[in-house]
Length: 93
Image (cartoon, rainbow, N blue to C red; front, side, top):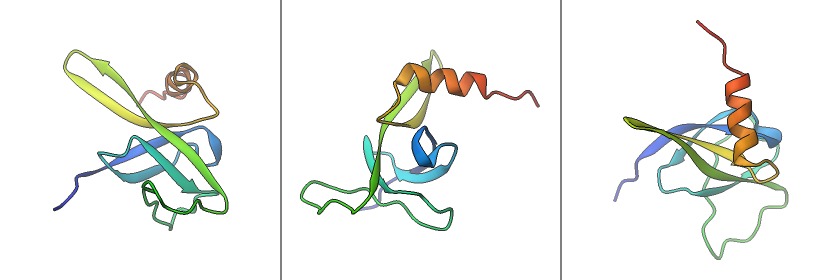
């Protein structure tokens, strides 16, 4: 069985601004801290031993009538603060 993956931006915490490839079913992720650009992040399932040092991120989304956009937010940040960071960080092309 193959899983679909997507690249999501991580907001807040030590992985702020990084894009990480995650399975579309991942609603929460524990990532090694700090995340190095060359490392892979693996979803930790129930029953897995906790990592020595990890950061927790939760999937959030923004919806418009024709689409939905997903991103991961550090548990130390509210979803509203994360959306504000996305808006404030916008740079016109």
